[in-house]
Amino acid sequence: MKRLSNLPLDEVNWIPNKIMKELKAIGIVTLLDLALMSPESLSQIGQKEESLKIWQRAGESFSYIKKVEDVLGKGQHRKKISTGSSALDRLLGGGISKGKIAEVYGENGSGKTQLCFQLCVNYLIDSPEKNKIIYVDTVGTFRPERIVEMFGENRKKEDLLKQILSIRARTWTEQVEAVLKIDNITPDKVGILIIDTLTDNFIYEFQTSKYIRERQIALARHLHDLADIAIEKEIAVVVTNTIRVRMSKDGNISEIETGGNTVSQGVHTRLRLARPDNGWSAQLNNNKRSIRFKIGKRGLMDWED
Image (cartoon, rainbow, N blue to C red; front, top):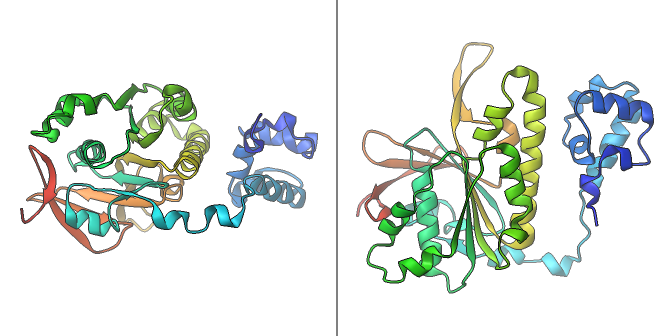
């Protein structure tokens, strides 16, 4: 059975043919594409009032009907996964939460991948559940030997490694399919889904300003799928991301995560990592407060240890 939100526009009987042709001309081919359009982009479509009504109706297609008692308080009991640093755990309200997307972004060498490895180790050691971890590697950063090193003297490390499933996604379509086919990858329940990194495949394959719209639509759709999986399956979804420099019209320079507002608005938690002169630092959701931590042979630890 097809989900309504993913229907091709050709299968939607309440969109007039003239508007449908105009939508397809700018790359809008599904209801999800239509719902993710900004109100400003509708200016490219004729019959503005009718187009706005159609856009609003497409957005309503994502409202899933649930009984209130089925979801009441569900988020209050979500398990947290420790980062290895008590200071970083406190910053995150106890650790990385299931049922949410956490974006970890920063420059090269800021500890993004190391944090992902540490989450794998801590989840497998601390959790009584025998759930799998899916690690989608898009840039060749997955290092099982580093995870073994982080396990330290734990004698069960070889058995624990069997719980990690690594997927090398070389294109954005392979990356998207890995998420959509999560039930086919393993019959077992999944505890963590990691994508390291989120945006590289999209940036590489949608090059030049000509394809920015298509890239952002594809990226937004991918994040929507990730949010669905996190919430519906109670999985901790962790994505890493890079940063880029942006110059405003008045000449001011700022650093933002790659993918811009599409990414920042599509995740639940945004953790900025950096590497000052000594050690590493973490900042949550652009809050001015930051904490320090260290990364050693055994992984992440508190700054004062």
